[in-house]
Image 1 (cartoon, rainbow, N blue to C red):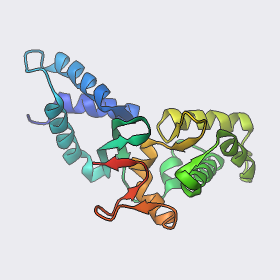
Image 2: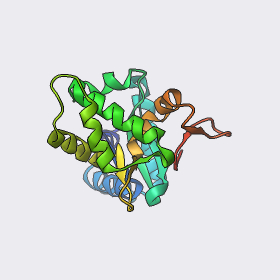
Image 3: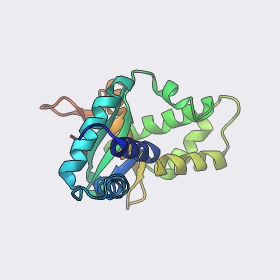
Image 4: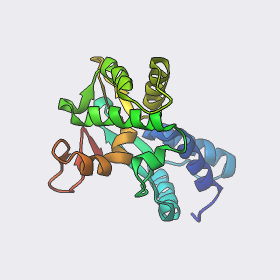
Length: 202
């Protein structure tokens, strides 16, 4: 199938959500096919992979990619819309957050990446906001809002034992960055040379 409204609608949907499960992706694709190609064959996983491959070919020049990630903590496959530009973490986040908020994200990310099991308690993450000395200061209320926002966005993931770990979006989008910054803490797969957490990037 040539690049069409199906591809554009799917790209718009995944870029809006940031990440979706493979089941959600198929449901979205089915909905899009119903709108644009109601007489075509009902799409399956093969169609989904073909659509994503075509989209990736178009968006690669913008340093973007839709990655399939197996997230082991909840045993779910996700499609993650990734910004793979070589801009720094701060540059990527500055479009949405203040200097203080970017510094806070960095501290939480660093804490999780460097702790055993790459996990940290929510209380510790909230406490890290006190270490931000940039003006304006980050209030505890705002820090809590940010942690909730970043968790919903897939950057952090709450485990059933009460700790937070690196989320599917962090692993997909910032895996290489974390590997470079914390090479003594991040494990690397001997076969594929990718940073390994508790996921498999396809």
